[in-house]
Amino acid sequence: MVMVMVMVIKGRIDDQGRIVIPKDVREKWNLKGEVEIVEVEGGVLIRPKKSGWEDFLSRKVKVDWNRAIAVSLEKVSVDELIFGVP
Image (cartoon, rainbow, N blue to C red; front, side, top):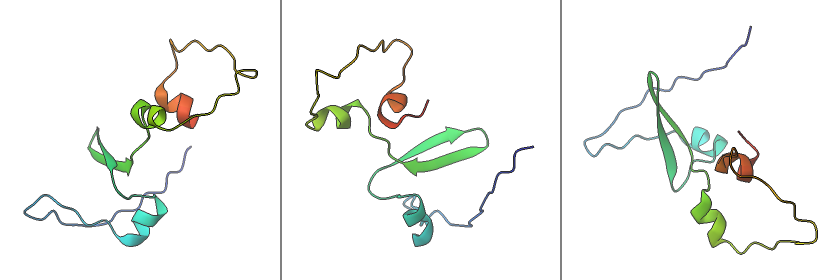
């Protein structure tokens, strides 16, 4: 059996469609600037924006070509490459 801790926070959506997320929750999950809003079964998920290829490629990346390996990107997601998460 897997136990999942869930915290329920009541909120209100104002006339402009804004929701206030409590400060302690924003800090815990590093919610600032842009976030991702993901539709899931039964509602929506708000999470920190993950860097995509645009952000990744816009940074100056130093590559040690002597240590670089060949990688097939055919079955690898951007999240897995950048964050190590499938």
